[in-house]
Image 1 (cartoon, rainbow, N blue to C red):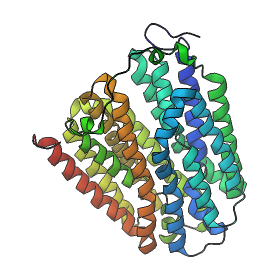
Image 2 (cartoon, rainbow, N blue to C red):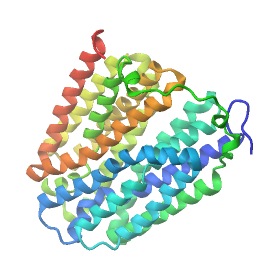
Image 3 (cartoon, one colour):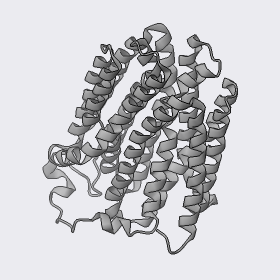
Image 4 (cartoon, one colour):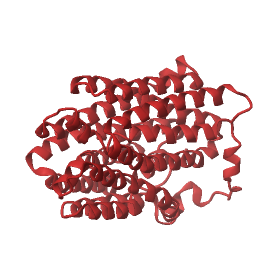
Length: 405
């Protein structure tokens, strides 16, 4: 297989389909089980609510934290061995880890496996790179958009399926099902994606360019604002995981209904966020980024306050929709705003810095939420609302002041 004149693969549509489907399956497989981790820890014999919240937060947060540090290592290997190999390596590691998760007997073993998982994880960003590099230049945004949509829709469907599995085959059995999902994603990438040999890739014969430094990006207008915004949005977006199942029990939901209703709320929020990703372009046509981001933070903050008030599950489900839409629009708007402010040759590295900020937020959020939840489940949502209010003020102040970056 050879590359076309545009630098894209002649099989780019097949490649895009393979990566998109694999991403959807993988993200669905992950959310079959992870939203129910607090309940799984209860089954392992930990009955202290505070300890469950802390173990859940640590276990959910450690994987993206380790991944953030390992990303440069795998990126260098991808340059030598190919990105397809690295995506396949990551997906297959999930097959093994999820299978082992079904055999654990103590909470510390869950944490240990999540640490190991972090070493081999990171297929999500690599999948976007695969899609972008395979597609023609004028189709690149579409290719990336499909992968991002898969990353949202997978978590929208996964918790509902996971809730049904928890009620039928049990949480241990759900981990086996999750492993099978990852095996399917692995097969889709290995069989469906065609990557050219290194010698045929455009970068193989390209003249080396001067390396871009962190100082270069830090000096770009509003780049640091974008990194801080991505981090803050992830702090809020991922804070629900360690506490929501326990919080539902605290507000009066029957134990047997908690897994399913947890899945419903997560699904509504994730589906709404996917919709938000899709309407970001339209939203930016109506409002400037400095107006849109604070507005989204305000809407999401109101949704968090509603959750903290401990209403009925029906009201929580309704609140999850505007909350998810606002978070989806805000996150995509940050990437879009940064993309418009950097040169084409700088986009990949610029987005990698944003991704690092994203992963750190992903890692820290459940840990903080777990410790706050150990004190008060309700407080997690009010802290989220306060953080979003602070983000709205920060973005408005930074992006309307010509002296700030």
